[in-house]
Image (spheres, helix red, strand yellow):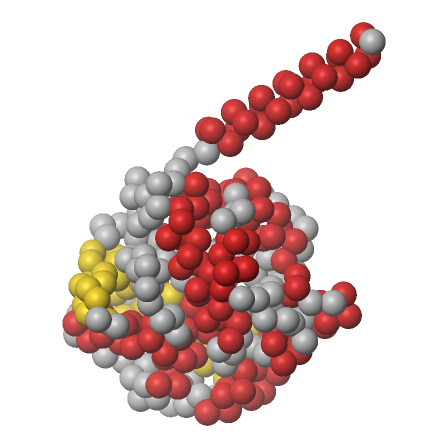
Length: 338
């Protein structure tokens, strides 16, 4: 009886500790209200699909001798413009004007209740924002979903970019064609409603970081989880379900040969990201998200492409080894001398 009482007491303490930990985590508004970005946030207002919307962005001037070039940074689905903070600093020191954008449905941008999300629509929105700033021929750097969006942008605007850099982009394989079942939006929403700090961390630890986890990875997870747990959590979950559907149904792999922009792929080789793979059979799961092969196949398919590989890094090499990543990025962006 004493042992049982002791066990119950331990469970109560553990449960209280877990609850206290959950309560201690920050919560944010649906547009990341309460979360500070490393630079002033500006707003781009525009009309799209019969409604007034806003994208947000940071526009950072060069801190080193200006080189006259602009770098545009596109975030991944589980990240925000603020996640690019260290890269913004490095690029600004190298002389770039840096514009880091939050897309509609994400982070500090509008969270519409009704919106037909597509990569083409997000690319058009991005083009309109850059046009409003007078930005022409920028370097575009996209991570994860941002790489997928960068490819769509380059396909739609073949003469508008100086260079494209893709950091572990998703969309380099067609998951549905490979055997991953489709998830109805209602089911996807129900799943998104269950999202917590712990579930985001577990997913990223498994697929992004090859089972590893470091304290510095917590910040972007807290940022995302805080929106789900905040007062606008329902619309956050809905937009996340919609954009998951967009990603799953709009792979870019079939059009890589049509890219005309000089492109650099930066690939972390331990990445195993494959949206929807959890719905597939073990046999299908085993062959998805093989980034060493995906990166090499994409580099072979894209004309004028070059490949930089980090075999020991995962989905976010800019977070795992910032020094090595930024060295390679600056080398990739070095002016091409005839």
